[in-house]
Length: 165
View 1 (cartoon, rainbow, N blue to C red):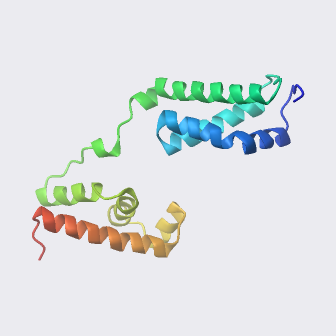
View 2: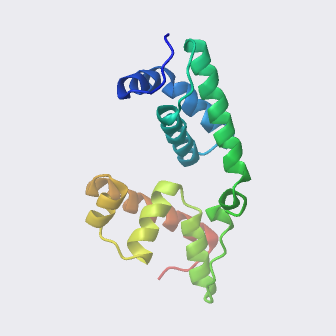
View 3: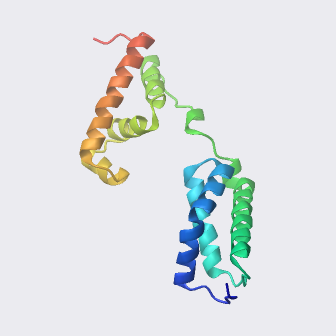
């Protein structure tokens, strides 16, 4: 491969097609989170596009991408935001009524796809059409998730001993 002083769209596209899977998988293995891995993936290829580093051959490109990816992952771990974030499971919701607290705990215990739509629909007041737009899915999918989520909640609450009248 000849030395390039400036990256062209075609060259970066070619490199993305060839190395995208490797960069994403490496980032995902290191950060264990889809969103962070996608951000790192994007940052690495933006840096490649902007870089003036001349590459001698394909192995040099691969080594550069691996090193840049690992460095971005390490930088993520050093960042203030990363060190101070907590999981949604660790969030304490202040609720006075014990029955409501149990319901909210049951909602938080649902799988993400059901918890998300139940919370946005019942607690935030979005319609199924609005949720479909927000979550980039069909309204029928939202209604199905709501129905299944309610079913899981019902089972969980009945097993938990809450009286339903």
